[in-house]
Length: 195
Image (cartoon, rainbow, N blue to C red; front, side, top):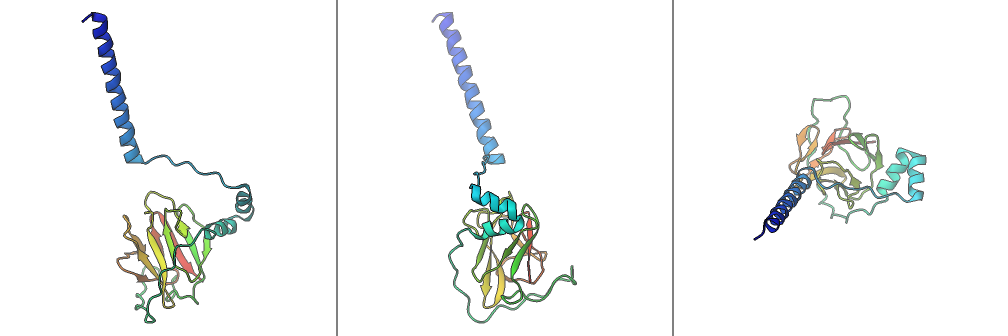
C-alpha cells in the first residue's frame, strides 16, 4: 500500500472517530438538558386579547383549552376533611366546597398572579397541552395532579407524579380534601383555592 493511501485511511478513520464523539456528546446533552422546544407563534387575535386584557385574557385563553374527560363523581358520602395545619392559622378557612370557592389563584411560579375560574368539572394540572391548567417547568409531570369534586368537596389527587403534589406542606398520597387558602404545590408552582 502506498503512503498516500495509508495517510488517507488514517484521516478517514480520524474523521469517523470525531463524528462518533460529536454524536455521543449531542445525545448526552439532549438526555441531560432536554431537547430545546420552540414556542409556537400565537394567532394575531389571541395575542391581542392577552395583551389587551392582561391576566384576565390569559385566564380566558387558559380555560379555552379542551377540558379533560369528566371523571365519575364519587358517592354521596364525602371523605373527612383534614385538620388545618397550624403553620398559617389566620389565612386559611374551612373545607373548599363548590359554594365556598370559585377560583384558583396561582401565588408563585411561572404563572404567578394568574386566576382561573373553577367549574364543576375535574381540572387536570400538568405539562401536557391536554391539561386544563398547563404548567411548563422541569419539575412538573405531563399529568401531575387533578382537582376533582367528591360530593361537594374539592379534592386534590396526585397522578403518580415524579416530584409529588403537596397540600399545606404535606405530600398528597391519596385524594385529599382541599382547605380554602391552603397552598397546593405542583412542581415549582404554588396555588390556592379562594372565594
